Image (cartoon, rainbow over all chains, first blue to last red; front, side, top):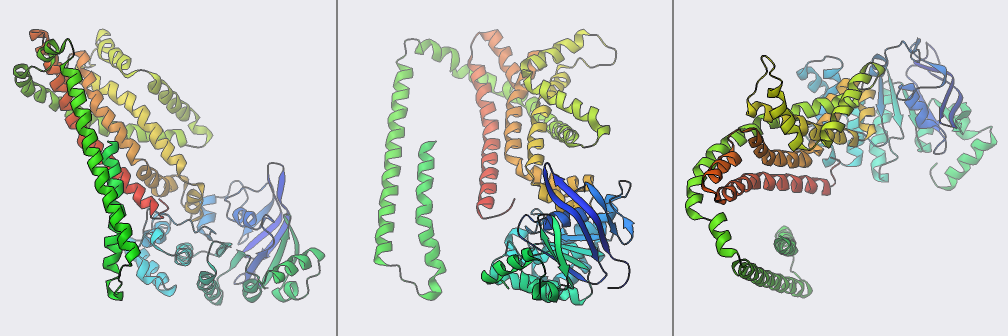
Length: 250
Length: 308
């Protein structure tokens, strides 16, 4: 891994009331790499992503985006979020807007791009993700897979430096998972830097340059996909992966 | 009312049969004997329900009529409340007065929507700077929602002129409209606030994650959805406002109620009140039906699995 990391976390701690959700989390994400966060539900994967995007305020530690400390209270949080795209598990498309309006909202209102230019870019992205015909539809007329791809386009439309994907296939029927994952695969080939929380172990093994296993808010083990899936060192990791294999998901 | 509902419930039972019959045409679908039998039974049941409803309505009507007509004071009541001659005299005057009610509704309605929205937004503002704004807005809604409209009207319409302030209007219409706006803005602000709070936090999170500021998230994502969701209760409040414009007559403004009042005072016959009342009902019905229609339409959309 070369170059300054796009995202760097150091000793991040996050609590909700009495429960410690993240404990001393360190993370480095190099440019044009994919980092997969795996672990049981409640292990802190989603919270880690929400902290990186400043949707949650961390209690201790620091987070850098391209060498700028974004957890500095004086940092412009809106400006930071403009550089990070997020795709949520539940899509979170805006139901009162068409797909095209969903996608062009941020480019037009936040980045000041003209309507024609924003729409042209949006249509180009939609075409690439096979949604060209759906530009004028409202989200509730789309299947789950189409909604999630539209949400990915919405995140990409602002040309983010970093893309955070929060269990983006968890709410999808098995036959729709493939279409969304192939989009992520294409993004990796184009060099997009991504951090994804996922339960799709086969997929994580295939696309991730770095895999982190979270357990109880701690990064228990990290390494390349081969290292982590092939020869996990920690007993906890081994047990987790064995359960996954037994469930037929790896 | 229940009668018509029962009938309309029967109808959809027949429709799907007709619909899917058409849709399945290309497959040369032949309805089974079981289905034909089932639909015949449904039709028979619908016919029976209609017949029972008609009969029951007729009986109820006749009984009500007999009870009223045989009441000991009916002839006197009829003369005092349902006098054709006074009705004809009052009707044009009442209609003339009604124009004032309509104008009040339009102007107060617009003012109420704007003011209500501002108060609702004020209550959702974050940050320590806005504490006084939030507190004022909360105090406003608490006070004016609790204060009976009639007392508010008397204070504003009768109290403000008594101050004899230079440059402040004593026009009962303007003052009455102000009082209506004050009270109804408090109601409508609460409707808007409930709407804003009903939008799931994930929508705001999605907006913020795109880099939208708090204000932009409110304007482009939260408010449009909140307003859409609150259309039925808003229309409900507007129907109520339409009716309450009649109360400005306490200050002496000649609206429909006051026009009736004038004739009653002269003739000591109450028929003009009945006329004014019916005119208000006639004005309110279209609005109520419109509200029902909008509500039903939105329910249908939701039933179709929309996330609205």
